[in-house]
Length: 202
Image 1 (cartoon, rainbow, N blue to C red):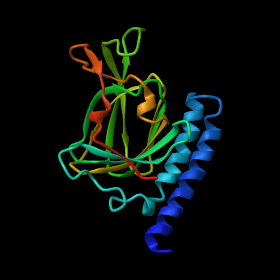
Image 2: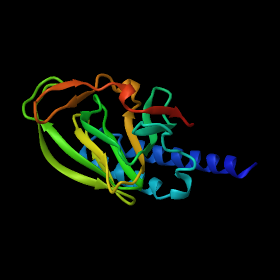
Image 3: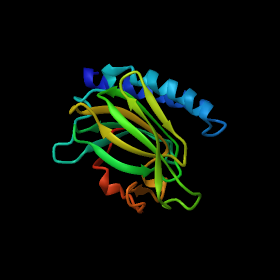
């Protein structure tokens, strides 16, 4: 077995073990406590930095903002884990993830997450939104989002990113997603083709 195969196999085992632990942590649903337990386990996985490198998960080779490498999902599309390789100019306006919770852990680089909430109850996509805080995600840290979460994301320091993104379900199964303009209060669909490349790396 060559070194590349050995590394890939070990990474798969590490990922499988982490997902199994997070599944147990999330058994009662995406409460703040359960997400915190899941976050701690994903931070532990992201700390195995020799298995998550730009060499294995290259940056986009065009003007795209990122490549998302799928490294795990259940047979039904649940517990989808992506390695996000983001360019230094990565920026996404405030958006949701359909009805999926999320945990994002840092490996390389710093990423700002600004969080928003809708000013009034309503259907997904109903604006306007108001800012409610921010978190910087870097190595050793992570952030969580409940199913109604809205966040704005951008790379910091003019440097690329390598982070782990775990979602309740894969991008396709997240359903209708929306992006928001805090200034105008307008919302419009956020399509998968805005995410750059999505590559099956299992």
